[in-house]
Image 1: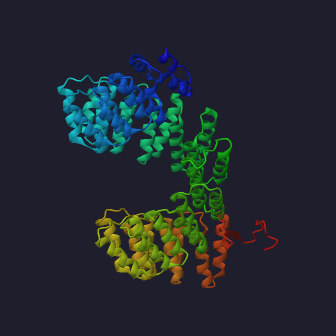
Image 2 (image 1 turned 120 degrees about the vertical axis):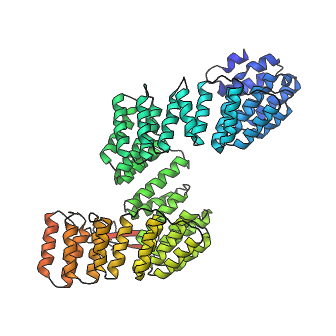
Image 3 (image 1 turned 180 degrees about the vertical axis):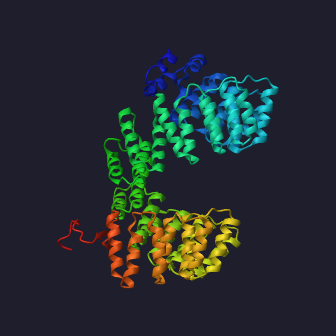
Length: 636
């Protein structure tokens, strides 16, 4: 009767009634049949009462009863009491050991789980498939190839029958330990493969960069479930094959496979990478039509997609529905990420004023402020040049007790440097006291920004002498420093060092800095040679940097030659046109100025209006020329 009652719908809501009933005198047989407790979490006092009851009536001596009690403690997350009960048990069988081994494996205490497994063998208890699966998962997590191979050998020697769960655990172990030879052999020899098996193998090929083999294996599988589609599309996307991933996403639709929450999130990340707004809107529409529950995870994917596609109106629309349509889970991780995502999106799209307002609203609503939100708003302060507001955010960081790690520290260094306060930037750098490449790169760049090129180079040399590996951003900083300080030879040496010693492939920013380095020194012949040697005639940024140098040295003839190459790219950026027009204006060649202006009109190139801003009482106000949109325009 008790076991039947426990299996009724919503039995977990009737726990108090069951407990009262159980605490009366019951035989071990009835206690054993109340398996309901093994599958549900109970409050500790209730679990403890059951434990005491079992000891008093002697049913604790029954191994089935003791195992069920052990399971109750485990399900209730009372691991210390579970271990205590385990030690008190007069008898233990394979189920007893398996309960504890699998629990330690599940909570990440892999070393403790392996120690238990060793003790289990010492007591002469033969593990079953469930025990062995848990042990192999521990070996995977710890990358213990030797121990895992020992377990595999024990399985073969003792004739343990492989089921699909044990085979998948063994297969996953070899993959995670990067023994791909054994993994491939096992995969080909497996008689029964389920979706998990195929997912693991496809994921392994993707992780090793063997995309063709992964796609081929994907094609080999007959009936494809949603999880295997998710694996291949996500793996291709992570490896930089966005177009192939998109092609497979379309195939998934044609195949008739229904999207789940994970599919939608992967698809939205793919849209963000491709910056395909129309596709993003289609996927959003599909989310709504599917009737799927839009949880915080999916909502944040939508916000992030719209932000990265530059569609802030839709991003804000999704964000504002958080309290109504989606439902609000106050101060949950999902809610905090939503606020962080929208602030980051506003900063990314240059809407700094709205970013400040949103951050202020976040503080007033007492939403937990994470490091990502702070980093975004500090970046906005740097872009806006509002030092006082930046100081206040820094004060908030200290008040909230956020650790000044490398990423937060580098954001503050960057903010103070861009706001003209190099001393505070240096102070933050010294406070962090961390040999982190992100942090040191920020400080190198800060010195460069303030024209302190030699100090930037000294700091860079010091970091390398102490074993810090520079990255591509570090070299952008040090090349900028060399350019501003006129250190041409040093800059050329660092450019070679980057390629030949550190194996970093130069990007647009590196090429542009080198052109600027030669250009500031007036070495125009070297620029031409550099462009030819590196085959970078197609890079507009390079020609624009060259044109800036022509203006600096007032070389009209060279400027005209550079402009021909630059305007051949048919750029819609007004900068190069304005730059050439200004060069002509300096020499009072007004006919050429008019010609450039007409060329801009014919190509539909418009000059972006400049923006000014002021900070009054912790609020930033932005203005452009002839702006009449400010709510206090009459007072202004």
